[in-house]
Image 1 (cartoon, rainbow, N blue to C red):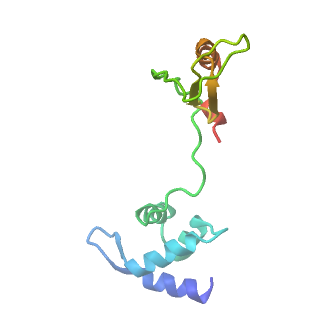
Image 2: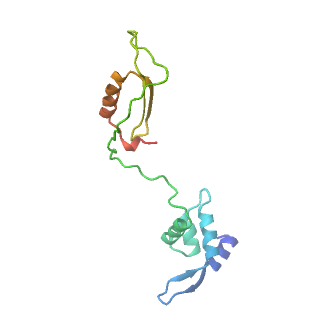
Image 3: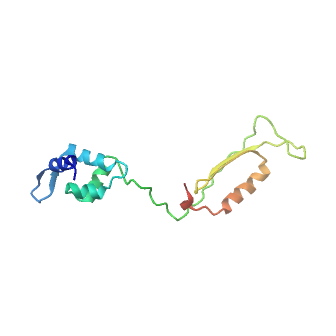
Length: 146
């Protein structure tokens, strides 16, 4: 154990409550939390070397605004698709379909539960329903969200 860590261990416990629980110095707790946040630091090793339960140090990390340092496990249950009514408004310039018929283009933006974003602009309103139906049939797993 280094001299700095030995000094931290000595300053950490400032007393004991009637039920035997330790009372800790706030500044020393903050120093231990800072040590735990260093890249490659082992919370359990530092806690053990300072004579503190690793769960207690984990609680201090949360209290200091630092939760778990690893990414949360994504749920494997896909989120249900939610569709919202979208008003169809004509665009300023009226585009023409291949047959020469004028139509008001529709823009569609959707974000699927797996993180895929769809952005369609000036789509023929006759085809927008097909696009929405196709999106609704896609299997989207929340576990592929990245």
